[in-house]
Amino acid sequence: MSEAADVSQRSTFSTTIDVTAVLDRLGIQFLDVHDHRAIVIFDGAILNLECREGDLTALERAEITVYEPPVHGNGDTENETAATIGVIDDFVEQLDATAQPP
Image (tube, rainbow, N blue to C red; front, top):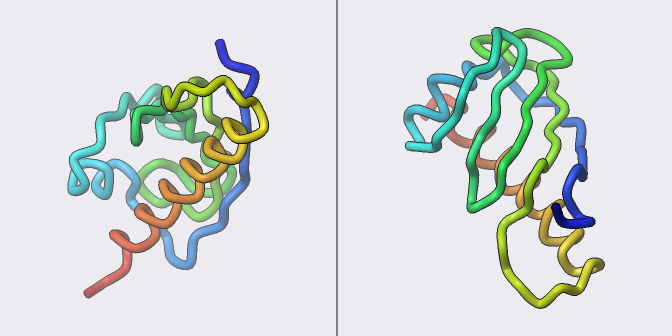
């Protein structure tokens, strides 16, 4: 496992999100482990999403951990950590944007 793995970030969403519906709509693969946790494959990374407030169908706050970063290859741990944080940021942005009403 990479040294950049297990990077975590807490996120608060602007509105309550039905994570399972949003991930289905985006075509993102996930496994809902229980009503407060899901494993998500996003942009080549494996993410652990744990609800801190709400549940997967009414999420307000979450902690997202990268279990396995995407493979980009040069072995530079500092750049890999930055890329891993970027994956979390991109994931949160997509969840938030897709959950917003048109």
